[in-house]
Image (cartoon, rainbow, N blue to C red; front, top):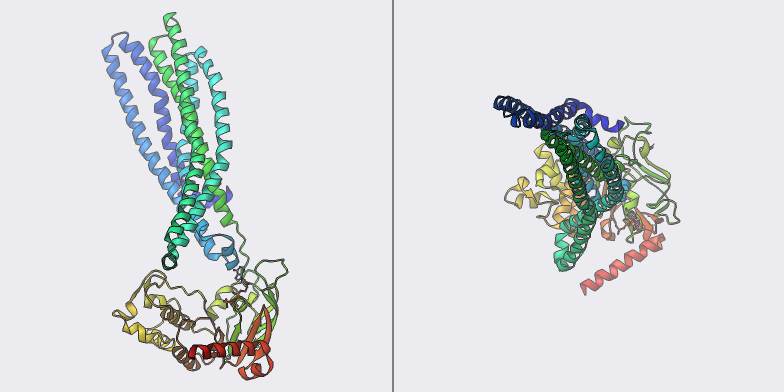
Length: 579
Ligand SMILES: Nc1ncnc2c1ncn2[C@@H]1O[C@H](COP(=O)(O)OP(=O)(O)OP(=O)(O)O)[C@@H](O)[C@H]1O
């Protein structure tokens, strides 16, 4: 509860006013039946018109007060619960932004979307319901019981049978409902993940003509959710009629027993009317409570899932960093006996005792078969993941000792999976440097060989990019991503297979421009083509997570068998393609 106090405190007024204003309704609901019985007994039966008018006016006034209170309570409970969930959502989103790559690997995107939307909505609903019912239901229950008791003690004894039965019924419903709601939320997760994947990859689906397959997949998860929801709803569905049945049986019993009392002259007619209303109110308040509990049981399942996100331990932080103010100045990178694996504690090392040094301004080529660990290696430099053993040093300082912000500001990385965002080209490029002048943006775009095609667009730098940069070609997207990173003016630049979709002539021009724009930047170039790294000061050859060779192209051609193999197989392929 303590952790949620901060979502209540700023709106404490609304949290207090909502249930208090609801008390006006309780007050009215307890008084009105009594006044009704008085009108019948003293007004109608005694034929006293003035009394009827007087009591009628009082009853209207009470009804007006109830309506005003009800509106106020509804307003404040909505305000409190919506504000509560908005702040909670903000914190959950913030937490997700803090997640490390490893943390993100542990949750599916669809599940995070459900937690941020549907789960928080459930919590909001129950906060609103609780604020409206927390005084109303118990108030009506206790007030109704007292009034009924005061009117007729014998009749109240009927409730002694009904109330325990209802309480047991509610308890059973809750025990059955909770696990079903948990299952239902998981099914919503699965549906969201599926929808997300299908929509993001709609182009691939279409190019493989997999629409029918995707529809089938969707139908299955959709049906699965329907069954899960119905299964949970069954409890709610059966709960209501069962309670109504109990209520009706009780009313009949009261009317029957009360009728006998009236015939025997031991009870005025008006009292039976009021008594029946009180009985209905008592049972209604129990039903309201059961609805609150039922909603709460669903919200508990949601709260558990939201808590999971909030409680996730960020496995990569800079809290222990000892050089928080340090910034990357030169860009020297050293790997000392570095080992790494994604699934901890297994035998398979993704990187196995890696050692090398990259001096400031050098270009380091990284080559190796797919899955040999190239991406994993460079991801350790900006701490997207942490090394399990050994040290990664930048300018002689362990990367874990920099503040994450300073470290990542000094390292520019163009990821293998390039992503642009909706917005104009200029807005996208400004991700690299928000305050960059237009001349700088053009300079870096020229360097990344992007200026030419950007200006060929009708709107130039104002061209609106579709979602994820869907309206530019693969090679153009790669060049925009390079320009965006160049604007950061990083001391260390990592290009992870970032020119794979660019033709060799353009790639050579990008490389050439780096010799001037990025003269002092340490450059890591991961590539599949030997031609892309041949010129590098050092080439690292990776083979199943180990360094198979390190040196210049010439040195490796003389000493490294793995490199020679890659070289000759690519030459052969080029020849075959030429022939
Ligand atoms: N997020 C991840 N979780 C678990 N395993 C992963 C993850 N990313 C990569 N791997 C595994 O780690 C190994 C090395 O992958 P890595 O991406 O570093 O190779 P790579 O040399 O860059 O390959 P490619 O040239 O195909 O991009 C592979 O066996 C891969 O399956």
